[in-house]
Image (cartoon, rainbow, N blue to C red):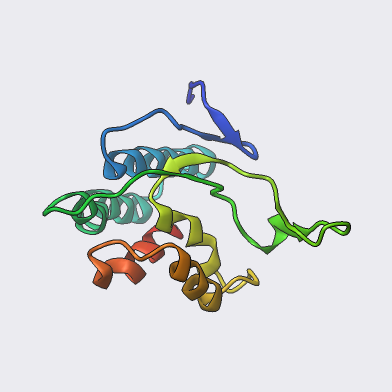
Length: 152
């Protein structure tokens, strides 16, 4: 049985203790989600093999370059559950309202991960607008692959 003290995103704990690198933080939280999946649905050798490859190969390949070779990311406070169902407009002020946050400090590009899914009304148009305000991190050529990883 998993045992912890953390903030919650719905009924899923958000382990938001500080880590020295984004790669470490992301790996810890993805590992937790994979372990939770296994606990709920049982072992699956194919899923275990794929998960191991993602954690040991894909995550380091895509996230380590963000903080090596002179690159650095500044952790920002993320909403972390930003999709059209959590966005509205105040009827009196016409100002945007966002709610149902699962906030933590992380890489700014993580914020856009739900927008990749076709079921959400946010899409690549929103992503381009977001990146006019918040530039793509270096190495920029890995941006789409990082977005796919974050969408897991």
